[in-house]
Amino acid sequence: MKNGIYLDNAATTRLDERVLEAMMPYLTDIYGNASSLHFFGRQAIKAVDEARASVARLLGAKTGEIYFTSGGTESDNWAVKGAANAFQRKGKHIVTTAIEHPAMLETCRELEKQGFEVTYLEVDKDGLLSVEDVKKAVRDDTILISVMFANNEIGSIQPIADIGSFARDEGILFHTDAVQAVSSIKLDVNELNVDMLSLSAHKFHGPKGIGILYIRNGVRISKLITGGHQEKSARAGTTNTPGIVGLAKALELTVENMAQTNKRIKALRDYFIERVENEIEFCHLNGGREKRLVSNANFSFDFIEGESILMQLDLKGIAVSSGSACSSGSLEPSHVVLAIGCPIEQAHSSIRFSLGQHTTKEEIDYTVQTLKETVETLRSWSPLFNVEKGEGKYV
Ligand code: PLP
Image: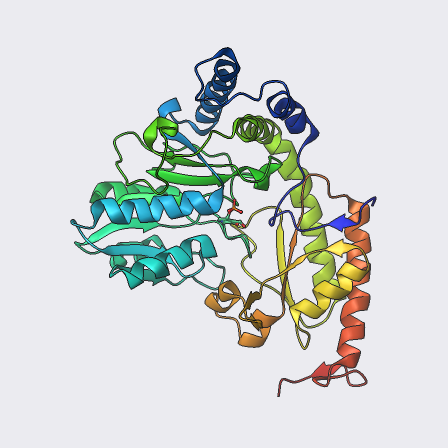
């Protein structure tokens, strides 16, 4: 438990040492600008070309369909704004879900200010979208459907291939934010029927500040970032050679070890859920049990705020995340937990535990024990909970 217990792998992951090793030469000796014509530059571009080819192979894509960006947020922005800008003459309607990451939701809200109309589809109590609802939502002027592959708070996994197949039949562009999915789900852009797909390296043990937007050949969206001629003139900015090399290495390791890692993490996650449910009263697992990322457990504990739990666990050396978002100095309840139909108190008290490849059983045991004590202590301080009677009520 060297540096504390890290159960926040959905926020970011530790850089894999093998990734760092692969990046190192491009941070030191091979520092040329990949656009330069001299041998320093040629060495860099060779590494970038190899990385692009490797990433394409791992995603079932063509090399020319992989564009490097600064991360998931940029990729989502590019996909949506790029499509909106390019196809606004055809229509101004976009379909997405109510549980997207802010990278998507805020981008859609910006577009609404510019006259686009966005349908935010509801999900069921498990956090799942129905393909039928997508079908009902599209109109003649729908230019884009964007549905996240796996949710970052509750880990729900959407039927991407089915939505993609429908979108293709209708001739509507389809984008998925696969930022959370890639670490445990094997992605193949053809099997998924996607036109665009966003990824971010720091979610799978790669470096921060580098991501991908996959854009299917023939799909012409507008640029987001203008400037130089990098990325076939589609995305300007000096090529992040070490980042790209690191991303490719991280993806290779992720795919190579996926089956084994998933098995381990899922067993630990299921054990964690079972113990919490059996040993802590008045708790709720947010989201469904099936079609859920193997690394995700999201709980609400009645009569306590999520942040209080987070801070108490932090003091005991356990890092987790709460679902509430800080907005203008106050805490907003989790929009995802609200969207699955939970009461506002539950949305205020949600805590996300996201396991990773380094998580051990010893860490899970310590976390359950600490969580039990924390919840008990916080409830004993809560005016909403009567400790002697072992019951509480919201006022
Ligand atoms: N989309 C999802 C689903 C995410 O979970 C995140 C990060 O938390 C992002 C997009 C943003 O990615 P990045 O941090 O690379 O900008």
